[in-house]
Every structure is written in C-alpha cells, then in structure tokens.
Length: 302
Image (cartoon, rainbow, N blue to C red; front, side, top):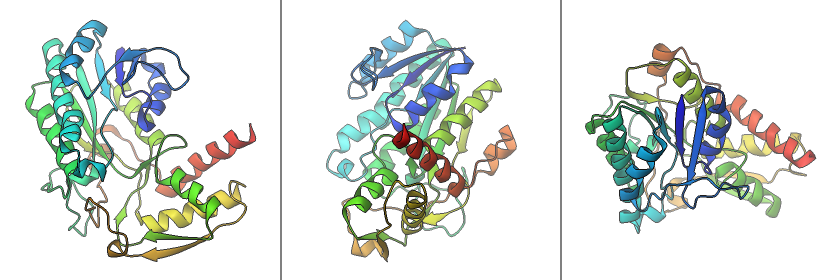
C-alpha cells in the first residue's frame, strides 16, 4: 500500500516510520519539510489546513496516517485558535481529501476528551467532556473526521512517551540528574503508553486490511499515577546506569502543582474493543517502559 505519514518527526511519527515500512511505500511529511536527520521530505503545515488537501491529492495515498497534532496542553489555554487549527481544522481538511479519493484516514486522539470523573476505565461510547482547550480541540477533530464521510480509524491514546522528543520520561531523567528531590503529582491516574506500542499496533491493524472504520482505545495496559510512573522511571534508570542515583520522589496533589489547564484525575482507557476487533493485547505499561529504557541505555552505550 502507499501511505502518507503526517507528523513524521514527532514521538509517534518517528516510530511509525519504522513500523509502517514493511507495509509498502511510506511518504513522510513534516511541518518544515525536513526529517530529524536533515533530509528532505514533504511539507504538511498544520497551521495552514487549506494547503493539506493538495498534498493528499499529489501523493495519492491508499492510507493517510496523521500523527501530527498540537499537544501543548497548557499553552493551548492561551492559544485556542492554534490548537483548533491543528487538531480540528487540519484533520477536517485531510478527511475531506481522503473522502474524495476513498483513502483510509488513521488519526490519533487523546484521553483528555474525558473529564476524569469515572472510577472505571473509559469505553469508546462513554460521554466525553473535556476539561480544557486541548481536549476540546482533539474532540472537535474526532467529530470532523467522523462527519466527513471518509473511511477512518481513530485511536485514542494516553500519556505518550518515547526515547526521543519531549515527554514526561525524558523530563524526569533530566531533572533527576540535576536535583536530589522531585515532587510529582500522585492523584492523576492513567496508562503510560509508549509511542512504539502505538506505532506497532497501528501497523498490525493496517496489515489486516480491515475495511470497517470507527473509534478504538489504544494504550498500554495497567494504570498508575504520574508519581508511580516517575518512581518506575527512576528505578529503571539507575538499574541501567542512566542515573548514578535516584532522587527522592515525593507525592503531591494536583492542588500543590497548579497548571493553566485542568487535567482529568482518572483517564484510564478500556482497550477491550481493540482486543476484540483486531486480536491485539497491549503490553503492561511497566514492560513497555522497560523496552524504552533499554533503548535509551543502548543509545548511551553506542
């Protein structure tokens, strides 16, 4: 198949370049037309949604995988227009182009479409109620794609991290090398999900050549708090020599660490539909973390 990958330099996009390669020809696009290694690729500027349909028409893909998004959760509160352009208007334009040529659109959304008041993992059909601009813009993107008439697969995921890019894991490792004590929120619960798992699952699903579209939750299994995630990161990093010693990781409440955007207190996603429809069972978040830390340790050694 011929695949157009949007957002090829991001956390998920970088992993998708690896996982999708065996499925056919992958044409990569980034915002500035350059890959991380400086080589040239297609340009897909999500701040200018009106230019995206021409890219789809020129590449003529069978599948468009959209891994681009505005993900600055707090900054979105003061840049709602930018978040809406990238997360709703751009996907709408891409979906319209896909519909006109019967291309499949694969798109990623977020656990932040929920308000976090549930005590059970969220299912796809549960009511959405985003707490902030970021979640609202991602939900608007979901709706635009669903209403476009395009064949589509939307995967909601959560707490995404990788051995590259900007994410909680790398931030914790940087701070741990600088400080003896870290204070991390312990009353927000979710499922840390590696970009590698998202990419591998996407490739496995596309390889099944499914014709039916829809919405699925796609995360690693299990749940923890940001504090629990941080403790696991420290323990694994020390074990691999990424840190000489682990700092103290103190649990704090959300009220102790105010942010411009409110976060859901509980945003664990139920992956049952994904398992039933595609036979995919995600790794436990601890196992996925082990793999990413092993990658980082290998990079340091090399």
